[in-house]
Length: 450
Image (tube, rainbow, N blue to C red; front, side, top):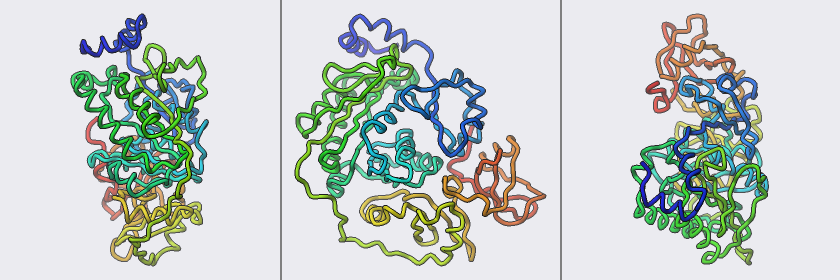
């Protein structure tokens, strides 16, 4: 049952629309996915069988007419699509209208990674994304989803907002703050969100959101864009904070060109609301603000810390594993190597010495004895040249066993490292030692239950 205070709050906001809103919350939840450009659309059999309809504000987004068993689909684990709320995909439309693909973007509260994978796909090979999560347990889920998506144009960091404001002043062209909130917009899909809701929690969330905005604000260039979103409805967490940025920090609201048929509601005060009785998706608030133009000192790399660069002995071998090696700088850190965009080499090095970086780009190899073993994130990378490794095609049952980290037997395959595939799609590596294969799928990513 919905809290009385929440219903009264929505009555004040929606008036005569309240009954329709409450009926929508009591209705069936919507399932939607966003497709990765690493795979041809027609190959997504599980999604096509479920029935697909386009999300109008995101060309890669699709509603599903029924919810398949995602966990059993190897394509999900290979990063071919992401199960994401359709309302959240509006970020794609905002980027297309307002943000250049060669921008440097910060996703401040990024886990589990839906919006970050969207941004990284939009930026492609031109821009750079810093994807941050302050909660340690959640940052590794974020890193996993970034790796599976496979772009390599992302730094995953684990810092608070103050660190960015203090150390990265005037760096970012765009900052997304998808702020932790009271979760009213998730009531239809998450009963736990209903149980945890209270007016006190709304107030606590609003205060925390305002702190994040204040601390990270110096990292945005004058003239840069702040995209502020929450998955909640109330004005305290939404309009009040947007107006705080506008009136206290110094910004102007930027309007978005939206098709009226999408059903998105423009707020009377600032921003836009997604209501489930008007739009096909869960609740969301969005406001875009442009930081006032002013004379400023451009961001300069600080040189108080220098990154020690270790020699990569087998560089030519590692480069042969990539489709476009000229685009990547390959660096060694102890026994590991990683690849990140060459055009942002100095900035990536700076981040790795001034911030807590979980990953920069994607991992390439791990030194095991005299040999370099490919890392799983390389196999997920879009620039991976899979022809460089002997391959073993798996059946669906074997692919699912592999994803559960079970040992495989591949008697007709050569010894050593093998790339295992499903329908030609790279899933990961095994090491064939004869009688069986050691499963090299990351243990923390394995399918635990069905």
